[in-house]
Amino acid sequence: MKVLALAASSSSTSINKQLATYAAGLVANAEVEVLDLNDFEMPIFSEDKEKELGHPELAKCFFQKIGEADAIVISYAEHNGSYAAAFKNVFDWTSRIDMKVYQGKSVVMLATSPGPGGAATVLAAATGSAPYFAAEVKGSLSVPSFYDNFDMEKGELCNENLISQLKAIVAEL
Image (cartoon, rainbow, N blue to C red; front, side, top):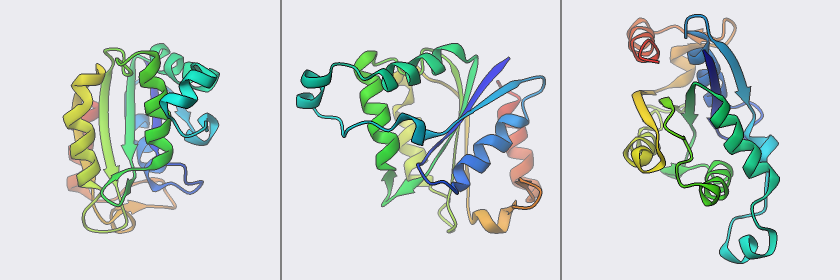
């Protein structure tokens, strides 16, 4: 099984990338590819830019990466209660190629933040809209207080309750 892991964040030290990578690594016998959202930087989407540029090659590449995967693990950063602008832009461009961005793939949706909210607001928005973009959401999990619940040295969750929940979710893939 080929699992695509990505963080909906452009931070070079993204805690969401760490969480997505860890979660994808829990999928038994999986070949994991970790995407860096910074590799898909494009102009801010607008209808005018679309008329001028058409569909950027990076958007086509992002769509192709999703198409090549058997399953997707994505972890959302929350910026002011919503998607990070970098992810929203990539998603907007890609959705103009085909609104079925997730192409019917099995998806695990995660989110985390340093605070107690665990980016739950953006996770709720993502899981709520996922069916419109052809995602088969197998489960979702918000990880609050990342630095209290994730061992940075080992690169893994250290909260037994969260570990158990995450393992049950990724087992659905």
